[in-house]
Amino acid sequence: MTDRSHYRLIASLFEYPDAGYPERVGQIKEFLDGDYPEAAGEIGQFLGYLPADDVIAMQELFTRSFDVQAIATLDLGYVLFGDDYKRGELLANLNREHIEASNDCGTELADHLPNILRLMSVLREEELLEDLAYAIVGPALLEMIGEFAPDRLEQKNESYKKHYKTLIDTPMVQVDAVTLYKHALQSLYEVLKQDFSRIEKMPLKRKSDFLGSIGVEIEIEERASAHVREAN
Image 1 (cartoon, rainbow, N blue to C red):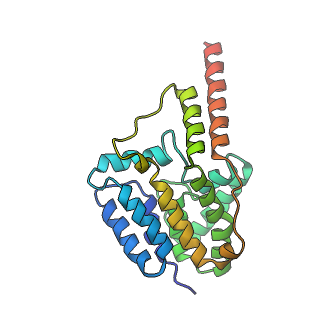
Image 2 (image 1 turned 135 degrees about the vertical axis):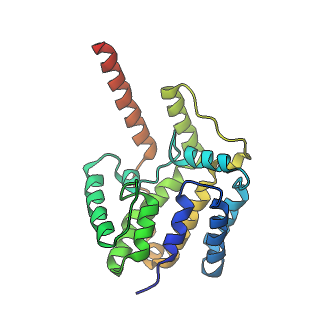
Image 3 (image 1 turned 90 degrees about the vertical axis):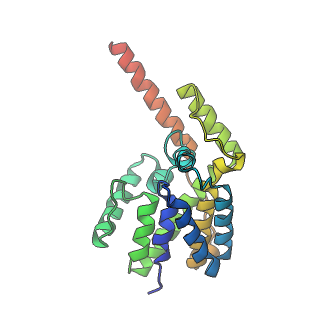
């Protein structure tokens, strides 16, 4: 079986940053420099924008990218299927694989990107691993990367401002740092392409719309709030 342990290392790219985060990212780049030059280049750009001496700024950039008024989400099933029943099926199947592999998901769901990457590092069934990379992780990464495009960012910000009346503050960093996680996602996609020839030979296409999911969620919240006001 081919060694896929580097996916456990890469998983730490998408964990909530702490004081040791820049060092871990440096270790990832050092690994990628050896065999994944294109992926290493993306991590080099990521490090160039990362406010490594400011933990609060790093955490705010992570939150703005993946949590509150997010650019994207790290829950891959939601990226691909939204609240469709297919996500439930995916979660059930992934839960089974996590349990069989003794892969602890902590407080996150089974389709959370770091959890899936750690699962990929220990899976022994090569066919399942390739299907996971080609059918789940690869398409979700393309969707997430696309959400960082300027026009998509503008549309999301307009949706958030319409609903929440304001946008959360972004940290005082250089302008390009606001979208630095695009480089982390692109780096992972370059690793996938190199590890799984099927992705290289049959390029993937984006298949879902995170912005549309945001709009649906906002509409649901607004209808719920209206019902509460009417009831009172």
